[in-house]
Length: 244
Image (cartoon, rainbow, N blue to C red; front, top):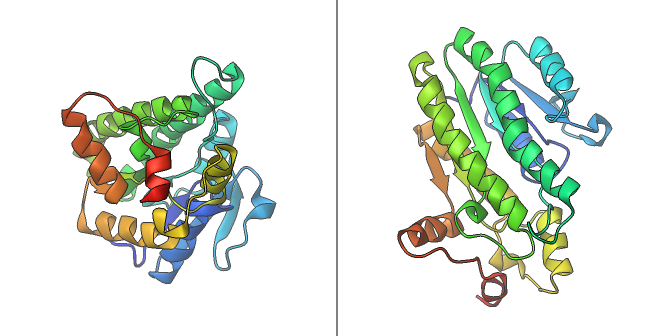
């Protein structure tokens, strides 16, 4: 996948990792970047074409696909992340977490797969989480949703291989976004900046891997979490990470 000259669409571009993706794509010479969000008025990215998009609303997904028929790179970043624990959490929040991470991502892929095929194959990058492999107490519903999204990513990779679409998973750990900082504060944990990824660095790692044709891109947290899959399931120790 070559970023220079490409037309890309990024979901959840109003802040955090999605905002950094849109900015970095433009800096790398993308011809056009559709920066999408449920509240497009919050997107402030010079040079991007801003569109309203709610990935949990099929009509919204279809409307964006009708406009963005020139896309060659789809970055699925948008997701609700604070569903809480599965047993004691609010069931509506848990459903929204699964709906956005799994069904929302799937809706975007189903809408844009034919577009990518018409445009030569292109690529899809799904932003996952190391929580898919090492669940986090306090937000186990998010871990479950990301596990499902990992399975989804592996499935559509097989299904879209014949049309020449590269399907890549970015599997990062703790990243210094406002959402992550809020979660840590609510858990009573002080996470120093060095304990987390810098979002801009993570996005550069992701796009480097995408351009190299990697199907999984892991940061240090993702590497450790995947290595742990060979043993018994274990939770992610947020307190230990903060002290590291």
